[in-house]
Length: 154
Ligand SMILES: CC(C)(COP(=O)(O)OP(=O)(O)OC[C@H]1O[C@@H](n2cnc3c(N)ncnc32)[C@H](O)[C@@H]1OP(=O)(O)O)[C@@H](O)C(=O)NCCC(=O)NCCS
Image 1: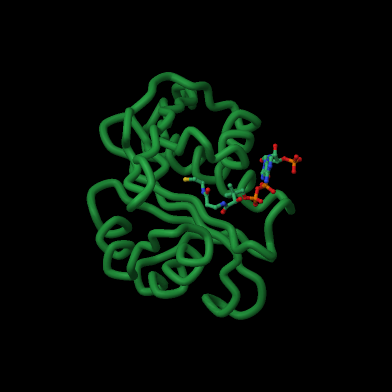
Image 2 (image 1 turned 90 degrees about the vertical axis):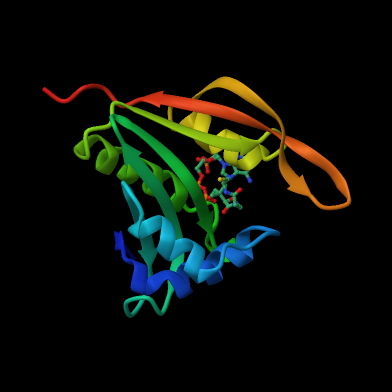
């Protein structure tokens, strides 16, 4: 198993993992635009040949001293093996290297696995965005805003 940087030409494989993790999948062009956009970067965990066996990935943005986790997805059969924890830690390190000293994310208020992961990774709840996630016929879901200080580089 290997954790490494992910590039926009691998967006199709990332989109496939995203589709298995979320009801509203992000398309490959959506992912390309974010990786190649200002401050964008992604990391993946793979097994086997490059981009054949993507097990999970994280997509982030780091601009003007602040980083944001835009999405994080682990393939269902690969869960509870510490992959997301490793991706979050690696992304925090990469964001710090890019000059960020704080990292933010939004997560649905009822996504208990992800909230558990982020709290275990040192994120604290800092705000609430009402009716942030569209859930079609169901009521829109609130988002928790969470933050983690990355510490200033010497
Ligand atoms: C949330 C998600 C990324 C976690 O991935 P994962 O690789 O299974 O997580 P890890 O194995 O690294 O878990 C690390 C810690 O997070 C917490 N956690 C993870 N899954 C959990 C679950 N189902 N229930 C409760 N806590 C959970 C635990 O504290 C866990 O540590 P432990 O296994 O030692 O108890 C994965 O479930 C997923 O892709 N979900 C769908 C997409 C999503 O919700 N993404 C995040 C929102 S942006």
